[in-house]
Length: 320
Image (tube, rainbow, N blue to C red):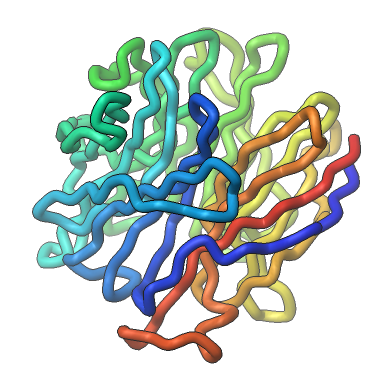
């Protein structure tokens, strides 16, 4: 797969810490969601949602907020409705609450409903993917020891009620996980790890077949955090936080399923606290619209907090 960066646009910047993005196309408009707060982990975190018809001009359509630090919003679609999932973090207790927010778009009011709070048996919701009109949600649960962490799969047919399916990976501080589905109904899970032993900070590729109860697991070769995986026609795109000469960046990779390896394809303008990409594919124009956050412009832009970050849109030409 060939990738050519055409343009990077700053979608949102207000001098605050804006992070953890996703992007969706829904009924002729584009939507970007992210967390807005005073810092990376602070109690004032809330979810912003912007919309655009041209990917140039953006309007804020919703602010979603609970009594906790609201984090890592991700879009999903079910039964013709656009939804958002995010999780609630308790900054006083210094851990996730085990509860998550679900909100759907109200086409009449042109905004998202107040979130409904769901409990996934103590798991932290991270991403939802739709496969054959059924939702598959990845979530993780932490603990004091790295072997007590686990990434799990849940499923739903309405976006509100979820049932546990299986454990994708246990141990090694396994946490954020994204999914991609292949033509034979196989599921690929890309799992972030943060184990302390050498090589344990690299992600795992887990593979399962319907009904996704058992997983084969393959450690990958490159460092990656905030993982995103997207099946293309003849390729598998991966993106997330990378490291280049010790510096963090947001980068794109191609996954080789035969060798179970990642190959670097493109590094985006990015630095510092950065990553958590989302992507929309324009197959007709062969373009990727990739959202992410970064601090690479924090020295030239005004700031309201010590560690500001902006939301960006990369427009990338691809060839398969």
